[in-house]
Structures are given as structure tokens and as C-alpha cells.
Image 1 (cartoon, rainbow, N blue to C red):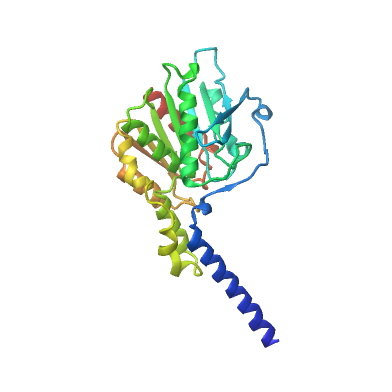
Image 2: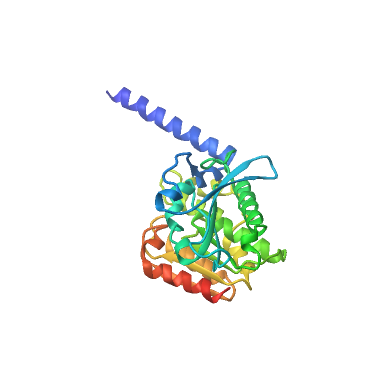
Length: 290
């Protein structure tokens, strides 16, 4: 019995060692991405009009997205929200986060990053950053956004991508400009959150520094968020967020420049918009910055 237990323990330790070795050799950026290709719900099931959109990236991938027109007379939409979703599943599972906006007079455009849903390829940090820019460039070229405000709404991983995208858009003086950026439950940096998560588990705690070094530090949100100014910024973070702790939202807000607004909430991660009062605060932010 003892011998069998020893063999099982040896096999387990060997497996753990091999897994950690693989992470050290290949990097652990893949821990940010948990895509699937299941269609959970489509906009028509929510009585929303929509159009499917296919975009070609510069490196040969095809991205799938949805355009949701505002529930308003033609050419009278209040603006357009470009939504970048979190790291799991695909746009069909994140749809409810923005399904309320057409009824408030806003168009919505949301895409799946490479490897998510009907988009081709496999995700990584550089690739998803490229995808987020591909979607914004398509959106800004549409007649529906000509002369109308465009807001970037990034949730969790999407917020991290949004910080990098918006800061570059502003610094390059791209046209048309963004009217506002909204970050919901976003971590303060890719390397930072990886080190934090690795350090919270006893098995990976000793390896938190070398493993986190395999992740680029070029896109740490706290280093770039200040460059979004003078575009208005709203940071939303829940004090009950069990996935991305509240201090990440505080750090991002502290690093940001004016004009900025902080909305502390009390919902689970990525559940902000189940509360009508929080929707109203976001609508107020957009109406003030047109």
C-alpha cells in the first residue's frame, strides 16, 4: 500500500514538474484566454435586430462580430458602443452585457477575438490586441459612426485590450477620436495579474516571478492608461469582485489622468449591468461626453 502511494505521489510530482517546465519554456500568456465555439444565444432571441460581420485581419485571420443597431429612428442614434468582452467563451455568452444599449438609443458593435466563437486562429496577447484594433478601424469607417460619438467599453480582459488600443489611438491622433472609454472589472496589467494569481496558489508560488516574466510587460494598463487623456475615462470595479480584486480598479484610476470618473460597485465580476442604477451612471457618462 505504501509503495503504491509512493508511486502515485511520484507520478503526480513528475506531472507537476513537466507542466511547470512546459510553462517556463513556452510562457503562460495562454492562461488569459478560455475561448469556446458554442453559440449560447443570438440577438434575435432577445428581440434585437442585428447583422453578422466578418473582418479580415492583416495576418490572415477572420473575425466574426455582431452589429446591433439602435432602437431609434434612422440616423438618430445617440452614438455607438464598441464592446470588447472578457476572456471566456465568446460574444454570445457576453451579449447580455450590452443587449440593453440599443433600447437606450445606442448602436453596439462587438467582435470575437481570434480563436473565439466563429473567429479563426488561436488567441494570444499580441493577436487579440491586433484584433481589437481591426474591429475599431472597421467601426470608425462605417457611415453610422460618421459625426457621431463612439465609446469603447471593455470588460475584464477586454478592458486591458481597450487601454492599449485607446492609448495608441489617442497618441497617434487617429480620426475620428473616441468620445469616451469605459473599463469594467479590468486588471491593472497582464504581467501583474499573472504574478498575483500564480502567487496565490501554493504550488505555483515559488515560480510566480520566472513564470510571470514569460509574459510581455509592454501592455501593463497602469503604464498606459494616462495616455488616454484627454479622452474621458470611466473606471468601474466591484468591491466584491472575486476574480479581479478591487485594488486593480483603484490602481488604474489612480494612474489615469483627468477627465476621469470612478464607479465602485458591489456585484460579482462582470455583472455590473444587472443593476439598473449602474446602467444609468454609464448612460450619464456617455450623455455628458458626446
